[in-house]
Image (cartoon, rainbow over all chains, first blue to last red; front, side):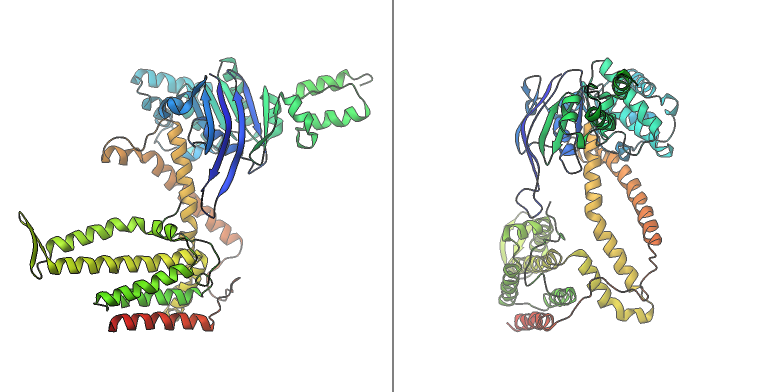
Length: 271
Length: 260
């Protein structure tokens, strides 16, 4: 599906002394089957923005459009099943006695047959590499395992767009790599992924397009190369290295991913 | 966003009063209201409260919104009072229900009293930062330290509890959101189903609260916290003339109210 936000504004606690304008006219499209990275500093509006993607927050003004249709006409449960939203630190919402039951919560809410629910749960857990944890208590797992179980809880709905808010925050490097691999697999399967992160390096590795937010507005949107080379001060390590090398040894181009950058550096004459 | 007991941070003469003065005045009012038994007396106190709310620079609509949760309790109490009081002459009769003139009078009284009481308490919490409130209570309780009453610990518990209300509120909102994203619906079905639908929110919220308590205890210990003895404060409370004046005026208003 194609998810579009048109000129979305969001004001928290409107009309009180606590009023904050978190989004100031954001327009953005998530295309079918792409990985869209959303980057920006703390307080730039990333988390507020993604809560509009399944209408958990309603825009103060502006529209959310799904395949050309105004999302408010679709019904919340329908929309939320199609746009899976994984919050920051999603493991804080684990609640069931076993991993299996926790992951089964969403598919059961969809009203699926019990056999179908079980099938989906075990399949989703397996795809996240935690199939062996099904019978355990979610509270007795390690941080990385909890995170994956919590993501499985959303993925088991079979969403067409998966929105991940800071999915790798606080994870060890190995778990982080596995999560990035999962994102690539989802894209292979035709699922769009929105990856919110302030880790520019990981966004550089998996994103097809990048949107940079700043103070509730879109600062830049485009391919990772376009966005990251537009402001090398706020770019992943690979882009900064390439920019610095380019200053003395031009001709390196605009590589973004680690393997691209390595390739470009090795291709330089005399290296 | 606005609820009873919430601090409303603006600058006003009421806000800048010493919390101890405000607590004492509120407590005096709570007692005084039940000594007043004339309508003029209650209305006199009500007028004084209206003047205070005006002086506090809290918009009237916001203030009334703070009181909304109490209206239900007021309505309930008044209804019972009116229906089950058998004083005075019968005003209305409907089946086995009789409404007496005395009941109406008592109901009106009770409503006004509860309303004034809650308004006063609401004004106290709306104009006093939670930390200042807890400091004030600690000071007022400190004479009890002689009989080994843990005044500092009680005040610290209150401060922490107050401090964590918004934090837990945010957390609950986040968890609600996360479960809503998984298809949870908190508004459908009867009361039993609705209560059941809260389990996916309450379980993680409780787990999180215990985790936070642990973390806070560790953080406090690692910063050398060890209770009240010899502890100084960053913000010292200063009881000034106008604070004494505020208490005196409140007591005076109540005395006039009792005499009216």
